[in-house]
Image (cartoon, rainbow, N blue to C red; front, side, top):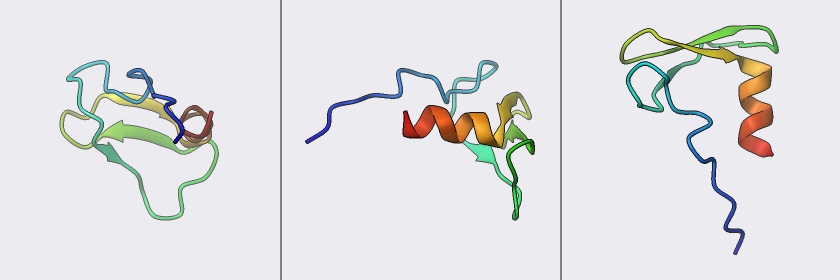
Length: 53
């Protein structure tokens, strides 16, 4: 079992949730926001890189 953790890399800096509003057809440079408070998470490509790292 792999015990790697995200260590809060994908948490919203404004409200702490991980609820992302990801539009259909999101591409590398699509801006992703929190679906709870609207806070900015980052670009879709960078967020995917953090998740898979």
